[in-house]
Amino acid sequence: VTAGAIEPIHVRQTAALDAELGLGCVALLENPTGTDNPNYLGNGDRLLLELFDAEVELVENLDHVDEQLNALADRLRTNGKTPYLVPIGGSDALGALGYVRAGLELAAQIEDSGIDFAAVVLASGSAGT
Image 1 (cartoon, one colour):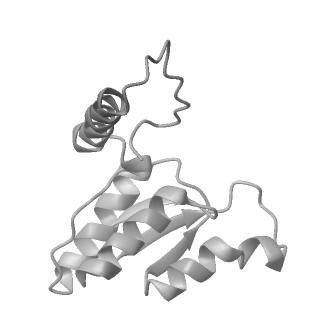
Image 2 (cartoon, rainbow, N blue to C red):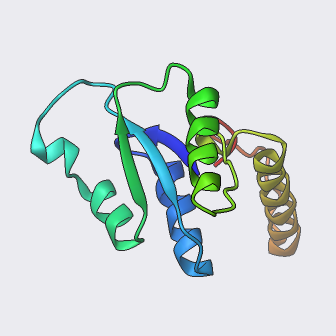
Image 3 (cartoon, rainbow, N blue to C red):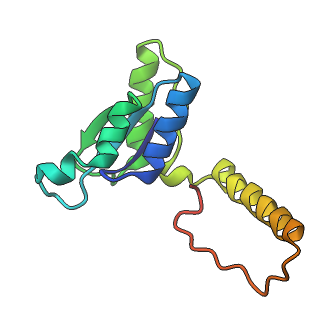
């Protein structure tokens, strides 16, 4: 169970992994632009979520995302499911460990390359995905 905007990189990654592992994915998606343009609402990200068999619930906003995710999880539990909540962007301690692992992998690749790097530049958003 996770949440994001209509074009959710994090939600797409979560749904892909859930599909690979045979788990279900339920996502709350908001439309931050407020548009009703079908090209935006039915974009490639949404198509991928459909291909990953993710259940999508459109919400007006995610202003109270923790409460919204918990309410969704409670509803799923009532239906006999065992939800695992993933915060927006995967931004929690576990998500940060993914960045640590990536850093360690990069350090090993740099060392193995034999190239003397002066710097490594990294762009980051939530640091969870």
